[in-house]
Each structure stands twice: as C-alpha cells, then as structure tokens.
Amino acid sequence: MLANLHTHTRRCRHAANEPDRAWVEAALAAGLRTLGFSDHCPWPRDAPPVPPPGFRSGVRMDPEETGEYVASLLALREEYAGRIDILIGFEAEHLPTRIAAQDDLFARFPVDYLICGQHYIGDGSGEWLGDWSGSPTADEARLAAYADRCIEAMESGRYLYLAHPDVLNFTGPDEVYARHMGRLCDWLVAHDSPVEVNLLGLADGRHYPSERFLRLAAEHGNWATIGIDAHRPDAIREAVAGVEARALALCARCGLAVREPPLPAAAHGSGFA
Image 1: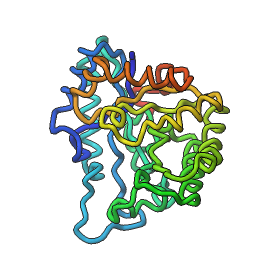
Image 2 (image 1 turned 120 degrees about the vertical axis):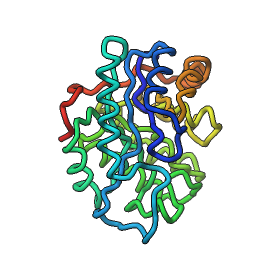
Image 3 (image 1 turned 30 degrees about the horizontal axis):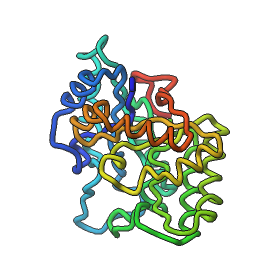
Image 4 (image 1 turned 90 degrees about the vertical axis):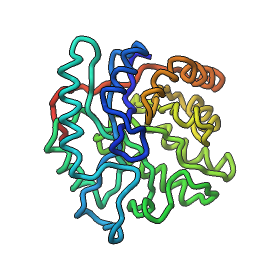
C-alpha cells in the first residue's frame, strides 16, 4: 500500500482525539507515500432537511470547523513536503437537497477530492432518526434506491471513488441483490472506477466488506482498491501489519484484482468545482 485516501480526524466526533500530525506520522511509519484526509463532510446549516433544535451531529464536523481543518492540513502538507504527499478531501453523502449548499461550502476551500460514502439513502434525516444504510433490510425498494443514488452520485463527477459500496446491508435473496448491485458494478467498471475494500469494516467484523458483493463485482469485471477508513492513527499501522493482507486474501478468494486508489488529477489547492 502506497496511498490511502480514506482517513478521518477527531473533528468527526467518533475518531480518536489525536492531532492530525499523528495520522501523518503513522502513515510515514507505514511506508505510505500519499495520505488523503477525507473526514466526514459538514452539513451546511441552512440546507434541508433541518435537524431538530439542539441536535449536534456525532458523526461529522460543524461547518464552522471546516476552515481550521483545511488550515491544519495545509500546514502539515508544507511541513512534510518531500516526505509524504498530503491531500485534502472529504467523505460526503450525495443528498440532492444539500448538494448546492455543499458545493458552495467546498468551493471556498482548496479541496483536492471527495469520496462518496452513502451512509443515508433518503434526505439525510436518518442521521437523527437512527436510520442509516447499514441498517439490515430485505426491502428491494431500499436496495434499488441505494444503487440508484450511488450511480447518480458518481455520474455527477464530484467524487473520486465510492467508499464502502457494500455498506447497504441487504438481507434478502441473492438474485435481488445481484439485480441492483450489479447495475452499480456495471457503472463503475464502465468508468474504470474501483470498489473500495474497507479495512475498518474488515477489522471490526462488520457486514462490509461483503464477500457476496466482492464476488459479484469480480463477475462484472470490477477492480478493487483498499481504503483504511482510519479513525485512529494506529489503524494505519495495523493495516500494513496485517489487515491489508486479510483484505488482499479476501479479494483473491473472490477473484478481484486490486490496485492503488485513483489520485485526483489536479491537487494541492486546485479547489473544488
């Protein structure tokens, strides 16, 4: 592993309370050449749906923290220049009612890339209602809506790749799963876009990465990339110490080729548009 583009920080409120430098030092110790920070994107306060009074997200930074996040990473990029390449990004949901406000927010900062992590299927209100994409479901309509939204997201051109595409926890029949997730696989392979094998999910024993999905992706001709999804600096060290090897073995068992993640064509202050 030479690059990881799926890295979080303490600002998302469910990652380790460590300075950003700790992730950079861990990446250097692990031999990475590129470290992309992609903390969970803030949701602009005036974009619908508006959360209930007093709600503060436990899974993303406040909009007011965006400037400090970017400034910290810019300073580290300069300090570590020549030793490791630091990219500035966000992991974002593609939510139609929030897209315009989100685009406006990102346009004010030198954002190198976005990855799409579709944690919610509808309008995002699941964040305070406790209904996320990983909730077990046998509902075909929900599965279809997830695949449709992911394709819509990637077609928008905003996202470098789709994070944990198998986060939708469908418990229904394999043929139904293949019908809809196969459409997503077809779009990704047609655009040479990878499926992420998520090391956080693998290390924690979550329902993703899903062998059912990875076998389907292999059948459709997709290729995979590794995303550490680091919420602790030690997760980067643990990746190269063994979790990555488990992911590579899983991909080999499923017949899925693995490559380094795609890098943004224009980076280092190009801005988001």
